[in-house]
Image 1 (cartoon, each protein chain N blue to C red):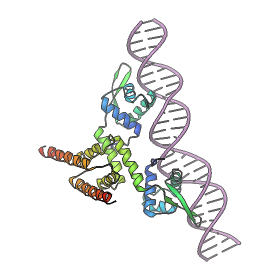
Image 2 (cartoon, protein in one colour; image 1 turned 30 degrees about the horizontal axis):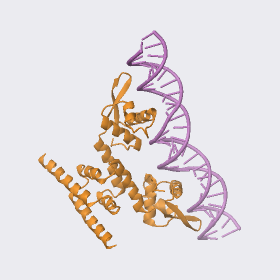
Image 3 (cartoon, rainbow over the protein chains, first blue to last red; image 1 turned 180 degrees about the horizontal axis):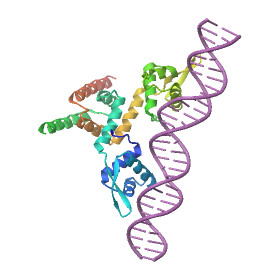
Image 4 (spheres, protein in one colour; image 1 turned 30 degrees about the vertical axis):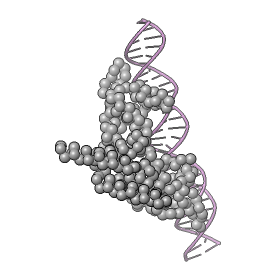
Length: 128
Length: 128
DNA sequence: GCCGTCCTACTATATACATAGTAGATTCCA
DNA sequence: TGGAATCTACTATGTATATAGTAGGACGGC
């Protein structure tokens, strides 16, 4: 199955797990800023949903608590987000970039930076 | 109110209206490819929802059919989509671009094109 | 002027998401 | 060893989305 679509809360939870590594529901909940922290059971329910979507899995039990770890990588999840957006912009990056330029979100500096990243990336690919 | 969040179907309908100009529910429905064409009433319900979100409005009646036109511009709608994605990538375009480069979605040619677009855009801004 | 077609307005339903509460088991510490 | 804390599994609810059906009115051709 392809990378599943994640909702906002699901994504935030995945981000917590990516950051924390294998962890419990409680730890995930506490990774949220104290303001805007969902109830324990809200996090728990969503973790269960992510489990059934196979993006998280239980690895072991510490005392009576399950420990969860990410199955889905951040790269794959973010790739999916980007693909979804690109598909709304004709599939390629051109229209997306043009829109960002015209709304002032993409500057000369950003483009220069991208060039550097690309250069480094190509070099890495070559040496491999 | 800020640009409202649109769902996939809502966005497809907006795209049809942007392309067709002021039009009826029937015309919107028929703008969908014959395969994957939702029922007339599905389109109708969603058009009504877009009306209550103020992204569409009725302009007139042709015989007994209402004619709808877009209130929300494609630029605004797409800007909102981009902002939503960017906020998941730290707010700025750098991370997004880096991800696209590393997954091979953003090439040297795309960046060169972006530079041209940016140059043209800046020139236009200056002359104004 | 009537009948079929089309449109509107309303209603219905299934799914999913975000949210959170409850009951009961387990663990741990005093 | 017993009570407080914590965790699990299950349940509940409100909202949104996607989907489409129905009843009834209006139009238009014949």
